[in-house]
Image (tube, rainbow over all chains, first blue to last red; front, side, top):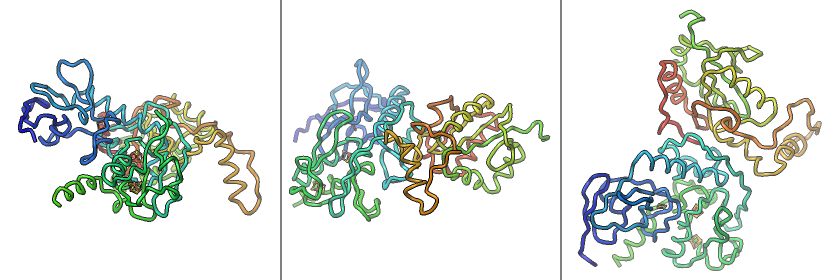
Length: 235
Length: 180
Ligand code: SF4
Ligand code: SF4
Ligand code: FES
């Protein structure tokens, strides 16, 4: 492991982190919180949700903190008025894209999208909502996917591939038509690669993948990937 | 305070379950303090038949699902200084808007309620206002001044918003209200 470190400023605080660290990790390790949805400790970074956008002084565009490595002398701003507005808008877009009705959702009060909306003060959406009617697959013995609630963060896909190692899940189509599928778009019950390990349900930030009949608080555990990685290293 | 100086408050119940009104009543003894400062001039809780002029604050529960509600909402907006979307149905459409996922959701909803799920007297009533194609949150139809999401919003968040408004301050809902 390289011992080289890099010095930079995040919100005017001088920090020193190993070379190659992402802005997100550098901030978190120094007690600065940046809101995220698709990033998850223990999985590769994806940079899909754009919630973690930050400003870098001197640069004309915004950068996703979860995929941008630090560089020496960088001055990062994580919490400007403009960023707060963009984050609210990102949440509004996510809420508008599919059918998010918290009051009748299995993940009500345990959903990362809902809690970020509340926390960031998104009290309504300026975008008209799409009321989608995508297929719900409940063919598996106990796992259910309701694609109307999916925010396409791909956490489930990454945990299934990188931690469970079977890559049952993937995406089909693009943009707002995109959908999480099992194997070559089989019903879940017919997937021959799925080991029924439930990790996808554990890391899903919303109520899209869940375990039928199990309290959501018991299912959800977004630390599962990091936990398993740590255990594997211990051998 | 004489009735004249009291702040004129109205509440409206559109397509919602009345849970937001229950939550409003659930302010318990705090409602007594409010009652000293406000006069409820129109509400499902009082007996006025037409919406009065010069209302200071109107709290609206429910989404807009039919023509009558749409017309009433426009009238209320014209007669109210401060209009508040109260609860998830008013703010997002919530459960009543689930029918929007179907092209002919209104028709399907009526058939479901009056034909499929009924044992006796199966017929769709004709004397009810025509359903709109899509159920809408209030701010898609009129200007809304404040939003209090929640299903229902808690009594304390309703009390906070009203207390701030009555004191002439702007309520800061950030981190206070919650969806669902
Ligand atoms: S249960 Fe495990 S193996 Fe099956 S799709 Fe989910 S993460 Fe992949
Ligand atoms: S099912 Fe859940 S974890 Fe998978 S992409 Fe959708 S929101 Fe993300
Ligand atoms: S957390 Fe960085 S883009 Fe989603």
